[in-house]
Length: 263
Image (tube, rainbow, N blue to C red; front, side, top):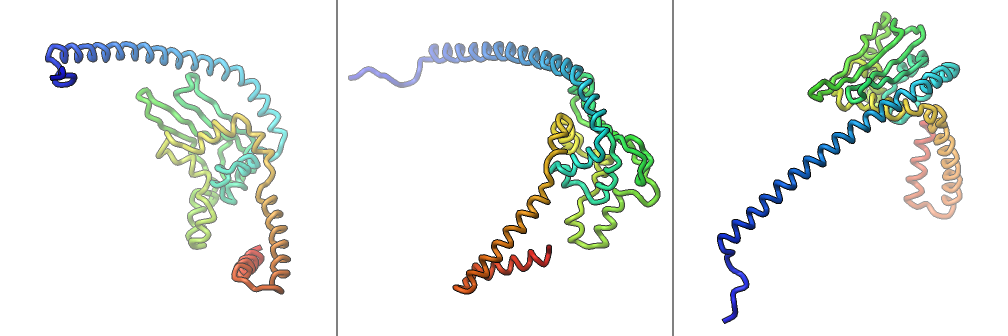
């Protein structure tokens, strides 16, 4: 008969195979430790480079702040033009932000431990503070936390309370349109590790606010475009109505009619 090509591996062979695999696993572990060690080294060196360039950037940030100070409403315009930030701004928030003269982002010395955002305000009718700050910290166990300046609102000017009152009075539609006040961000410390507004200001706006300041007002442009399209559609509808009165045309007329009454 033919010799056996398969079948149970002899016990000695099986144990030497296991031993070989076990040794391989131990070696993988040793190699992995070396990789981890290099990763840690890389992190330390990257941190040093980041710290070095943070220092080198400071005089330029300072110069930029001095130049921005010459442009009225620079920061409120920048925030209004930023899609994520503008979604958080109610009408009165915008009014208050017209008094915002300077924004500064400071990353703490070792970078990993957190950062602070300072908002400098001119004398204004809303609150007494000259500076509003929010700080983000990582403690030694890596847990994030935040703290901020208490806003000293002038009598009857607390925008964080007012927004909910006006929403309730005006009903659901108003509530949908008017976001919660931007200034509630200063009192919200619930999820410091995922503070979207803080991250957006630090990582997106602060590195280059000019790109948002210079963005054309999209609403105006879209508005003009829509008007042109509506006029063209309106003309087309009139031409087509003479020939055929299809369902599609009725729908378009209806929509146009609604749009026009809104505008």
